[in-house]
Amino acid sequence: MILVEGRGHVATSPATGETAWQHAATRRACQARLALHLLGVPLGIAASVVVFFVILPTPMWLIWILGMTHFVAGIYAVYFLQVPRVRRMFELRRILRTYPWQVHEKGLPHSSGQLHSAHRGESWFKVPDPDKPKTWVSVYLDHSRRSRWWLERMSPQAGREAKAEIRTLWFAGDPRFCGILAVPGKRGPQRMLEVPRGVRRGITIEQTGLASDEALTRALKAGVPLSELARPAEASDRTPMVRAPAPPPGPALSFPATRRSMRLLLLRGAAVLVVAPVPFLGLLSLGPSGILAGKGLGMLLLATVVPAFQRLRTRFKLRRNVRGDGQPWRTLNVEIRHRGRAVVLVTGNEALRTQLVLRRPPAGRVQVWFAGHLHGDGLVSLRADGAVVPVRCVEKGHARVRGRAGQKA
Figure 1 (tube, rainbow, N blue to C red):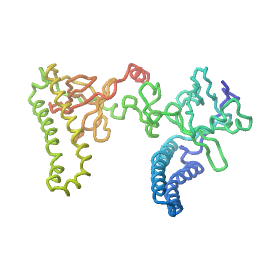
Figure 2: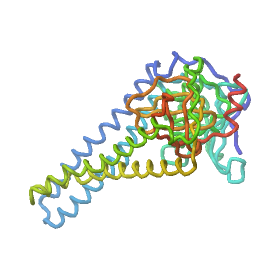
Figure 3: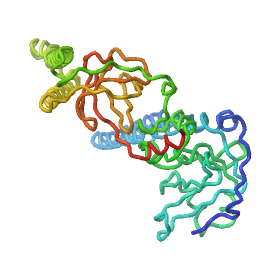
């Protein structure tokens, strides 16, 4: 395991501006890289035109082979090379607009991949924890073409001049969630590399550790997909809880308002299944021209009917389970959060996501009526009047969530 010189003597100087994006050289470097990636598509099209005119005098069968090969190569280059690069540049820009640059003049502790090390052969840098500056957090580099430049200079076989290139490092981000490593250049940061790898796949509640609410809020702003239970409590958790009246005794489906609401949900689902195929069947009745026109609606028909059928089946199953178990209404303390067109109810270590709610209640801490299984499907009356909204448990946390909340309290 090879570490840089001066471990334990990492100097961090203040960054220029509140965020790295306020640094003019950083903006120019990002805009130049983005323009280079965007120019790849028109340059590729121009190259295709040139190749077409070059192969034009050749036999027709060779033109077809070369043309199809070039067409497939162009699709691969655009969708699998250029589009991910452009998307990655926008992700880097979002991080730079959230975090400031930290200039480590004496480098950062790092190690190249060693098979028998405690890091299982991974190559890593250690960055100070923002909440605990004396604690180090390891960020790992994946062995890919983008990180090859860094890996070559982290290797024990690297020369003195190569190691000197990563002597001074810039870092923007939070090493627990996302960050960007760079080396200073004459015209701003160079060799910008997003670390750690796999951050876009989602951060679970266990990975957040004891991060502060401020750190979690900045991570969300930077585009880190935190799980619902890992998100910091919203401002509404400081408002007084809205109490609900006591639920009626007996099974939930014995309540008249619940029966009417559940029956209405089933009728709506059945109506969607009946109405959705009507435009498609109307085109088929026109004959061959209608069939040709209806081909484009085939995928739209499947995209409408299949989810509607699955939703209707889930509601029938939920109604059968609630009726068979005789589930009663019970009060549940929740925090209502809006996520797009749905509503997420956070209660303790569970996150329940509702289906489409047209009339969303205001966010805040409230008591609701709940019937069903908290770890699966259930019914919620958001207004505590018996009108049901189907919900599904989308996340289950552990005791660590309570530990973080208890520590803050």
